[in-house]
Image: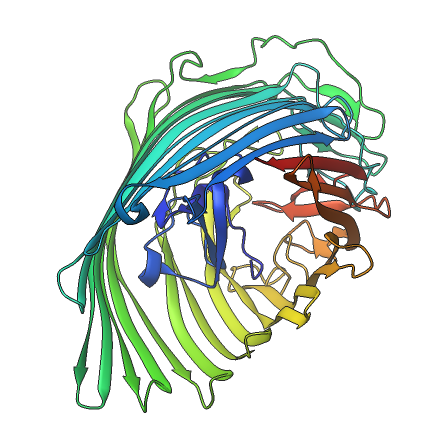
Length: 611
């Protein structure tokens, strides 16, 4: 968002960081997705993995509605991918105060990418209680995700130009590669109204996760797609606890209304890990014409960190913070000013994979202020401006770079602060809405220097304009669209050849359109479509490796009908209708970035039966 990477590690679950699975988050677990654009340290605290300078995603668990729910969904995807899911809920007790919702899914089979397959199992239970003076909720989730021959990213090493994107269905993963992740997680949350004007709230969440991977990332050194792979295995265990406690209230002083919040947050993570990589044993291949190898044993050149079967403690993170904010309303709520500040303490410690000796640590605190102003001349229009910061632990150094070990691999840099200013205007008449924002965010820059050390120098300055349109232009049409023009430049790097260059992976222009249209001629039939455009990007800091932009089109339909007296919803979608071959995303730490290929044309269908 806004040119910054937002990772699954930094996605919130019902307001808490770190509770969701890291690598893949199944959509069946959630009722609603909230997207908060811009920095948010004062609002949410520091993100665990150092992201969210451009925005934060909060996923809300499913809750029992006022009406009973009984749904079974059967799905099929191109490549022989089958799926079955159940979603049931009901309310009980006096005034239906107690709610129960359970959903589960199982998915298995090949994808539209050659030889790629996955197996997904999940289950979630959501409970809630609606009292006159207090509200309680609890959620328990389990997710087991197993991937086989997942198509890896492509590193660029020593090429003079970016190779053309391969056919979207092409796969250069080795047949022995896999990635398994299993997580158990849960939260509890409660609110209590002391008076009509004062409410206390609190939440606690915990996650236990395990991961195992055997991978072979391709480094391309020729525009004809030729390159090399080496085996990289790793295992990881996480124990994460996250909590918040607070008071919110309101009071009136003459013509001035106050809405205040006092909050405290805690985040604690223990990470156990082990790895083994063998870049001394390079195997030749080509992503246009891949060469498959049988399982490759580690050679005498392999480097081991810890025991893959019994990973030990490698990183600890402890975040503690408290925040105070007040929204002051004047002129019958036409003018609102929010002033807030958060004091954040970040403590991280890194340990040697083998000896468990401390290799790096810091214990730092910082104040992150925020101020925002909104003026509403009418009910439909509002004008706003804000200043806010994003505080994060330092990014972690990768273990390898261009087939060489990074000197401080696995260690975290010092914490850093991103600063954001924004001005905007919004319009919403209840049917159609739009917003226009001008923003600038300065984030400290992390990269791998000529000594193969991960370090921080200078900053990445992202400034641009963002336009969104949403709503229902007519009764049978729903629209959600946006376009962003972004200038993301490297500043004060200490290298005059880099200053002013574009940031790796950030396009100047990015836009999307999502449209739904209810066809009047066929009752219950809705046509859907998505158009996504991403402009050209660079995959290196020197801006010599340019990656072409792309535009994709997805088309689908949804049909609600009755079968044997039961409600049935049939859905179908064709992704990448035009068969575009493209590099979907670009990222990187140093002079040579990495590429991820886009998805091929694929058909997905499902039927949901409501009993």
